[in-house]
Length: 194
Image (cartoon, rainbow, N blue to C red):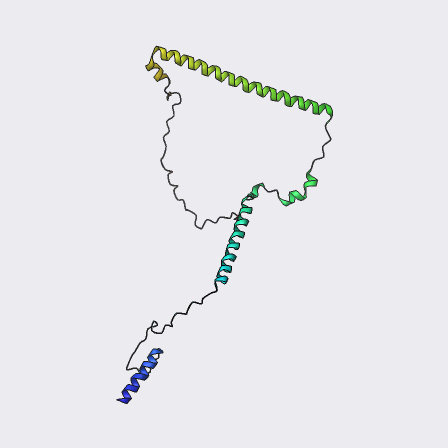
């Protein structure tokens, strides 16, 4: 009996360590049985926790300030940027024109004034013509309304026969015969501005 008790004690001790010394017992231990107890959480000083939170707040505020500062700046458009080679050659590219005489300057100023006056008169005459047309149309419609309400209602309806447009066509584009669609991925090469 003592021998059997010692043997079972030995097999229990070895099976807890996931070691089987006898093939007869075939004891299998799952990893859950071998798990360690959870570590105790360390209690932190409230002062240290407050300092960490303050650091986080300062970091976030700094990032917000940086984002607000950069929000006012517009993203550069590459097509509108002047190449550096042109900036380097600026002195070579500037034309050296002789200064204009007083007569030429006066002629140009008079031409600009005459052109402005002409365009102003043209605009005023266009507005006057439109006003005359609208007034005559309104007078004619008022007279027509006095004569017959039915004719007036027909007159103010839009006339669809003035612009006879009938469009007929395919609803979808027909497929192209023997077209092989290209393989591959679409890669955006735009620069990302953060």
